[in-house]
Image (cartoon, rainbow, N blue to C red):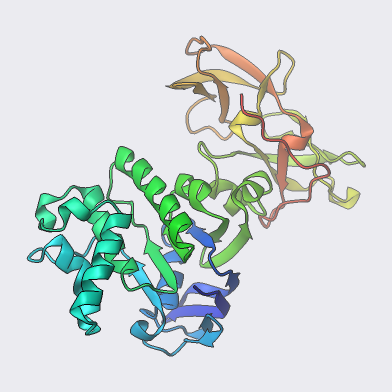
Length: 369
C-alpha cells in the first residue's frame, strides 16, 4: 500500500484551467472521496494521479516516489471506470486475468490470483460466463476484480456506480466498504453523489470550479462547511441558502435579517464593522424546528413523504425565500398550510459575499428527528 501526495497539481487545456493548484496528502490505506458537481475537475485530478493526463504543473508522488512523468503501468495504481470496459468475447475469468497475462505471469499464479479476486467479490460461480450474461452489478464487480487482481498500491475509481439503478448502487456501496476493510488498500473514489461520499469516505475532498474547497471527515464537512460551494455540495436535501443582511453583532454571534424580513440570531462571529453587509444565511432542513413564533414561515408548496421522514417545501416554487424543512414521516399536513419554524443559533451558517463561511462560536448540533 502507499501514500499519495499531490503538490501544486494543475491542469490547463489551452486558456482554460480545469484543475487549479491542488495540494493533498492521502494516507496509506485511506479511503478518500472526491466529490463535487459535474465539471469541477475531480475526474481530471484522478486521471492525473493515474497518469492518463499529463499535469501542466505540480507533482504526483505514490509511496514516496515521484511518478509525475511515469507511465500508468509503472505507478502501482489500478483504475475502475464508469463504463465496465469488459471484453465481450472473453469469459469472466479471462477478463479478470487479462492484465496478468499482459504482464506474462506464470499460469499457476494467474489462476491463483483470479480465484482469490473472484472469491473476494462473489464471482466464483460466474467465471465461465460472458459479460452479456451478467447483470450491471455483476459486470461492475468483474471490473473491480480485474483491477485488484494486479495487487496495486492504490485503487482509483471514477464514478463506478453511476450506471447502476438505486438498489444496485446501495448494494455496491456495501461492496466497496467491505472491500476496503478486507484489503486495507489506499482508495480514491470520484463521485458527484454526496450520499456515496458520506457513507464511504474516511475523508471527503470537496471540489468546485477546479479548486479543492475543503478536506475533512464526512461529518466535519457536513457540520462545518467552509464555503457556499461545500454547503451546496453536501447534504440531501441541500442546505437552505437565503440572502440576508447583518443587522447586529455581539459575543454570542451575529443577527441577520433575510430579504423576506425574518430576523434570525446566528452563532457566526462577525466583526461589528461588517454590520450592514449582505451575506447568505444557511440552515439545513433537519435543523428547522416547528415554532409558532418562528421567523421562518411559508405555505406548503410540496410535501414529500420518504418513510420515517418527510420534507415540506415552503413558499412559492422558484421564489428566493423558498425553504425546505424536515418533519417526522407521520406528520399530517395540507398543501397550502402555513408552517412556522425557528432554528437554534448553533445550527445556522453564515457566508460572506466571497462565499467563505464565518466562524461559529459553539459547534453546531446535528439532531436526528
